Length: 128
Image (cartoon, rainbow, N blue to C red; front, side, top):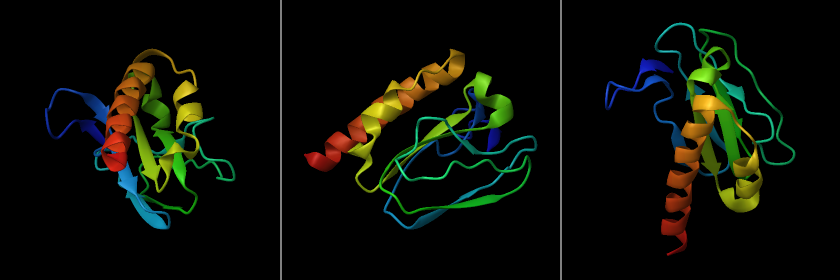
């Protein structure tokens, strides 16, 4: 969780990486490298049976993802600035279209659009 993108130095308020592909059972660690960040699940962007989460500001947070699907997440204080991300777990197509259809606003909508396009390309590579 960073104030600036470490790759281009231009984008502000980012998760690095912001798109992750993992097998079921993987534990992710969210680290607030810069202060003032957290991670929270984005409503409507979780596979069925998954419990929503919300970490405390400035606290590292471990999340084990057991259920296959697409997971949307964001930083609560910086959602309006587009601080969002996606995790693809196993067969991410399970809820991919439903997660993509969740209405977002402002910068979050722009960044999720980019993330879903990149995720779609990743999934297409897997099926090729």
